[in-house]
Amino acid sequence: MPPRFLEVKDLAKRFPGKDGELTVFEDVSFSVKKGEFVCIIGHSGCGKSTILNVLAGLDQASGGEVYMSGQEVTGPALERGVVFQNYSLLPWRSTLRNVTFAVQARWPGWSKAQVREHSLKYLHMVGLKDGAEQRKPSQLSGGMRQRVSIARAFAIEPKLLLLDEPFGALDALTRGTIQEELLKVCAETHQTVFMITHDVDEAILLADRILLMTNGPHARLAESVRVCIERPRDRTTIVHDPAYYPIRNHLVDFLVSRSRELSERDDAARDAGGSNAVPVSGVPLEVDPGADAMRTGADGAKAEHHANHLTGRLKAVNGN
Amino acid sequence: MLQSLHLRAALVSVMLLVVLLGLWELTSQPPAATEALTEYELLMGGADQEARVPPPSAVIGLAVAELSNPFYDAGPNDKGIGIQLGYSIYRVLTGFTLAALIAVPVGFLIGMSPLMYKALNPFIQVLRPISPLAWMPLALFIIKDSEASSIFVIFICSIWPMLINTAFGVASVRTDWVNVARTHELNAFQTAIQVILPAAAPTILTGMRISIGIAWLVIVAAEMLVGGTGIGYYVWNEWNNLDLTSVIFSILMIGVVGMMLDIALAAATKAVQYQE
Image 1 (cartoon, each protein chain N blue to C red):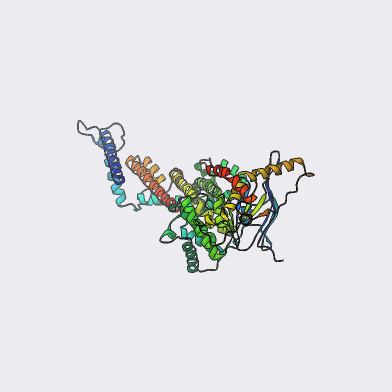
Image 2: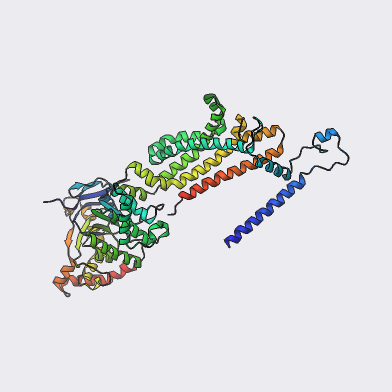
């Protein structure tokens, strides 16, 4: 069997604390196929960012391994591009020179003209042109800065793109536009993406699969939710897809109650001791709420359960 | 509005200058002689029994004369103001450049390595507060050359602000930017040149600006000690000649040159400044 594109095995992060170790997450195992778009959702403190940093090679896990095409990931590399939440552009360089910085690092042998042309191509791809290339990041809006950051990551043509809540700091309108651009660019380049987000709708719009984490400490990967909505997807019409609300309800339900319930159950099992504890599998449960809802129909027991559960819960989420 | 603010400020500056110079001029007039002066009184500078600070008109007159021919050289004790200032600037720039050549790399080392920071910190803390002139006897003894000794004194006084600012600037480069370098597989040297140096440059240049200011303060004192040439020597020499007009003139020139050095470094700082 050929090695999986990205394979994460029993990843754990622990910090030494005053009274013993503090385990942020453990038993995190999952894999990502080539060309797949995977989102990870969980409450703050469950270690999502740490997982992404370990994948990027910027952080060390306390246990477990990450393999990419069979090779263990031990440090940062150009084959894994990262887009940080705070853009991380170099403020003394112009937009264009922020991208050429990456392109030069990726292909040191290229001529200046070649580097420039390649960088401009990716800047245009994310909609930056007409003078924006020469401006400094401080002269750009948040949305434009994040576009530069995305162009920089795409320009090095990484095998895996890691996005750490890239749209978290943007207003809803800008976020929507850039999400669409990301969808378009990913479709063009068949980019493999691993992305952290807090936004359920964003995850459904972008992802093929959504990983759900329980609450930290002792967070773990609970579910892997398939998003069976066909591509190309569109921000405005996706909500009319029959699978949209079953998936959305499933995710919101998880975030509102099940993530906490699962954490409490895990804690109880751990306190009870190893003997009668339910062995926690590192591999997340595969779920396909969209297809399940289709199968059982509107008055199926499962769909109804979700619907009932949610009319009350959704308000709580939106109120946050 | 900004334009008019500049204009109004300039107007106030000129008015203050005129008023202050006027007061100075009026208060430093020698009393008019009531009777004809004897030959002795003429030789001693008038009927005045007290020495007076020369009036600004005398200083301006001397300035015009000196600045119209700044580079004349009529022997060891009679050189133009341009030559004297030139010697001082040369010493300051030489000492300052040598200090920068050492302070910036060492500052990088200290800033990037917590171990080196901890190891070198006690040395820096002890050496830094030493008055640069206290080094002079030791420098004269070891170097056996007054010219090189004054350059050494400039070196030792301008190294500390640069060293500390470089270390601070390097240590406080945002982790995000270093992470950008790491994810792009830049090696240590490339990271230092392409990311850390431009990120820390404004802080480093600020340290240099402080250094050159201190160096210019110290050179006057150092040249008073070692003598020979330079603006510090010139001030002391004119004091020995009891030529207070020249003393006041050279004090003003020290201020003007110091200001120009500061403006140059400020411009350099502005050139590397970036906005986050």
